[in-house]
Image (tube, rainbow, N blue to C red; front, side):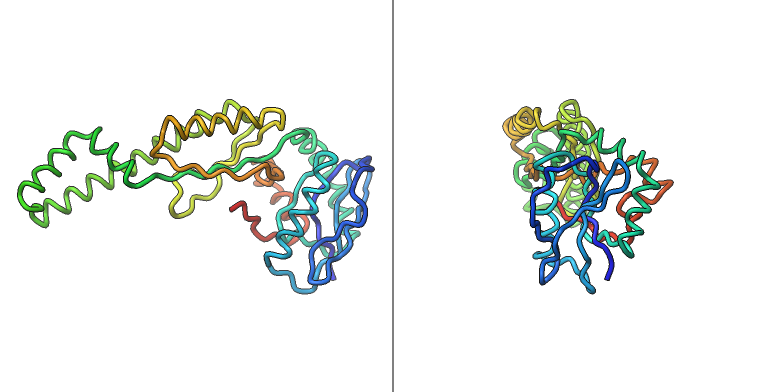
Length: 262
């Protein structure tokens, strides 16, 4: 049985909720392992850990409850170490890094913003903005639909225009929201999303940040924006240099499954 790691906190924290239950079919009690100036929120790990909804929610709940009383450096779901001694060894080895990230993340939360296009709305924009596409479409209609070659040509022109618009709108989204965030992290591109961005936002500025998203919706109705947050700042646990040179914080504790922010 290994040690499951939920997150890292300052060792001086005394405000953690009592009797927190963690992951597992029979929920494991949550406890704190202290090492110098930092500490890890942990529990015993189940023998077979899978990303089941029950355990994903338990992981999130522990972080939410712990985060209510102060900054937490969140680990991704599935961060398991061999035993308690291994966890405290990692804490000792990376104390300065953990303290630096705790300082940066103090009072901040992550907001994930995904964007895609309303298909009909963006096609209307493309037809209005591109004379060549509009002319060819009109000619095809007058010719009863046009030849197969003309249909293919029109389809290729529209597809290229949509792709260009996706890039433009992704850049617009980041430019408009980045000034209100302390940091931005681009997430993996997934089918159907033209942008997948995570923003580190000071909790005192959250209303302003969300108002800016509402303004974007009003000014650009062809954009469909999905916002998830506030979240523990998963995307900002490690700096890019530490991810490259040390394998990332979660990896230091062993196997790390992907944390969903859907």
